[in-house]
Image (tube, rainbow, N blue to C red; front, side, top):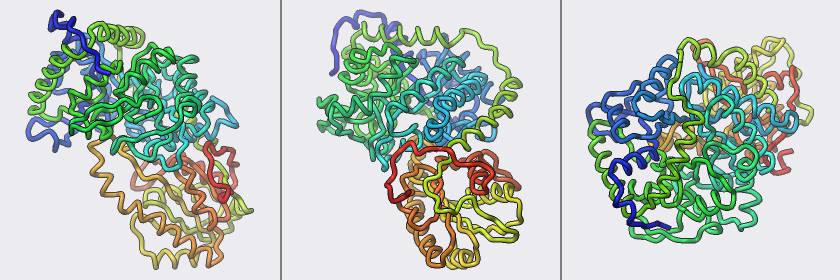
Length: 594
């Protein structure tokens, strides 16, 4: 519902400018002095004078950083200092550093861990220990870099095996467990001076559409929404109120069935981001959340396909959301003039469509949060930051979590492998990097010389693969589903890149199943490893005597001599019998896999 009031017309333009500016968070991912902004792919690693002037002039309240903006420790510290000095009020400097699938800072420098579902897998044995410790480390590393907001943790309850965008970013399918782990992370982040933004309210866990590329709809009954989707948010608000909550670009007809006219002149259900019933009546009224709310990126297709930028911002503000994230892309000097026109439209529409008293209350929430977490003066040091990021204690914790998460889904007396000298293992993996990482980890943790041959599903010779399978004593196959989503690489500007890989990714499961079927016909002892969401174990378990789940496959080190990551080391230790798999599945898989 859009609120109208004439009272704001009497307010000074400067007042409105400040109120609106503080409610915007821009991304400055790329910037080119010449050329059209849409084609610009030059990373913004140091703040150009034009952008500094823009941030100051419009009193912009915050900036979100992407991987392109954070290339090494000294550069990050310099950039955050530049951003801090660009505005009269300290800015929010935000990032998506969830850990696991979504980690913007170079994994070879920052400690990125194996992600939320691996924390969920450790819960039965370790409770909230790893949730707290991981968030403490990530928060500490962000704070020394000058980053003061982390869009984490994801507290969506992943109840849909086909969820393309959440899956292992979730702690699991149990709302109670998700709430406990999420609350532990909120506390740990904010103890380190980093604002935690839990997401994606009112819940993105039971969707089969990625809101980067479409507009999902959750058709749950009201009782299920409260028991499943909203439950973690409600619990965390009561127990460990986060500084921020991020919205979801999702339609929830049971929560709001009102309609809005989009830019195509069509009526549609309001997405949660633009729903006053959800963002104000439910979140602030029923759940009593009084902190700062922020939209998910407004350039995502779930919003941008249906609304012009200024309409999207006005509607989110009218719904009661405090901050509009990524409302307008500034990629070149030419875009600056377009941004000025965008802001002029915002001022004009705000003056006739928004309530000045609500804008002021929103500004008060923003200022209160900044007063709690953002000191007016900061003392950053690149050498200190370098000593903190990825230090030995942090890497040790990363390795411990990776091992604690490894889950034995099935084992028909295959594991640990009884390796003898000069035996052969054939690895089948999604790509050469992952195959090499597991090969090196296995060779580092065996007591006997091994011959290990490799097949990459990204491009391989089927005849050679069959020949290698025939010669092998053991087959180890790994796979990762679902395929990468835009959020992993960065955002909407990566969707075209993802499309190029999707054809190959869609062909991989069938190719893998054919090879595993062949191995079975040759009576080969076979281990299958689920490298991401473990739902796929149902499909591949019948071809395997043992199944493991790692929930992660990320590589921290990649040189000409070494390719390694904590998940591969943990897997190798379990496969070779040096450690036991103690993780428990945090989501349900078909009993056929057990």
